[in-house]
Amino acid sequence: MFRSIFLTYFLLFVTSVSVCAPATTNPPKRKKRPVAAARPAARVVNHNPGTVVDQLVRNLHQAADLCSYGLEEKVLKYAFIGYLNLRSRGQITDRGVLTIVDFSKPSTEKRFWVIDIVNQKMLLHTYVAHGEGSGHKLPSKFSNTPDSFQSSLGFYVTGETYHGGFGTALALDGAERNFNSNARSRSIVLHGSDHVGAKQAAQGKMGRSQGCPAVPMDEKDKIIKYVKNRTCLFVYYPDKNYLRRSTYLNIAHSGLLL
Image (cartoon, rainbow, N blue to C red; front, side, top):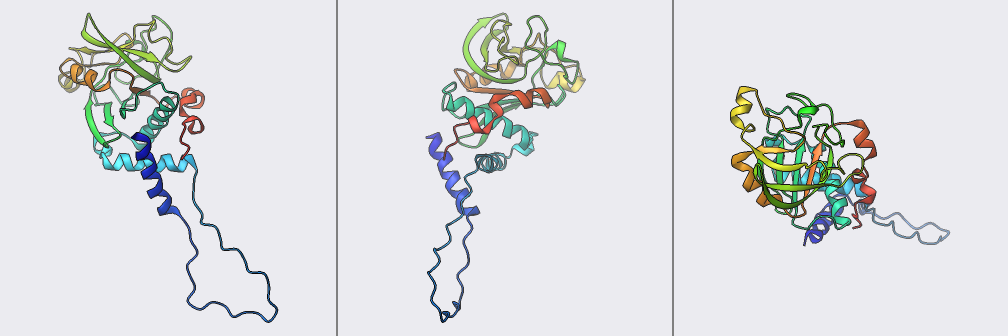
C-alpha cells in the first residue's frame, strides 16, 4: 500500500515537471527539396530519485503542517531517506510511522516528533532528554561507547516492550555501525521520566539521561504504542562526520526505483 502511495505522488510529480513543446498554429512551409521527417521530440521526464524525494518530503511537510510543529524540512528529508533505506532492506514494517529527534534544539524545546507519513499527519510532538555526557541544555557530543552516558546519533529500529525500573519501556536496536550499534549492549531504550516535560522546560531545568531518549512519563505509554515493533527512529544532529558517513542517508540505496 505504501509503495502505491509513492507511485501516486510520483506520477503527479512527473506530470507537473514534464516538458512538451507547444504546438505551433502555423506549421512552416515545405522546402523545395524534401528532407527526411524529424522524429517527434521525446517527452522529458525527470526520474532523478533525489528530485522525487524532495517533492515527497515537501508534500509531507506541507500536508502535515510540520513547520508549525518546529520540524525543519531538511531534517525531515534526512529522516525520510533513512526510512526508505530501512524499508528497502526489510528492517522496519510498512506501517508508515516515522519518529524524529532533533538534538540541534535545546532540551527545553519540544524536539520529538512521531509522524504518520502514510496519512500525512502528526501523531505526537513532545520533549525528550539527551544523555548527561552529551552536554547540558544543548547537546554537542555523541558516542557509541559504553559508559559514556552520551546520546548516539542515527537510525534505530524500535524493538519489543519490557517492564523495568521506569515502568514499561521500549528496546531500541541501533542500525548504524560506529554510531549507535551498541544500543542494546548499552541498554539504550526509550523510557519515561518524571524529570522531563513542560514543567521542567518552563523552569529551564530539563532532566538528562544516561544516553536514552527519555520522554515525559505521562506521554510514554502513548508514544510506545505508536512506535513499538520495528518502526524507524532517527536521532539528528548536524554532525558533519555522521552526515558524510551514514549509508542510510544515501538516496541511491533507498530502493526508490519508480
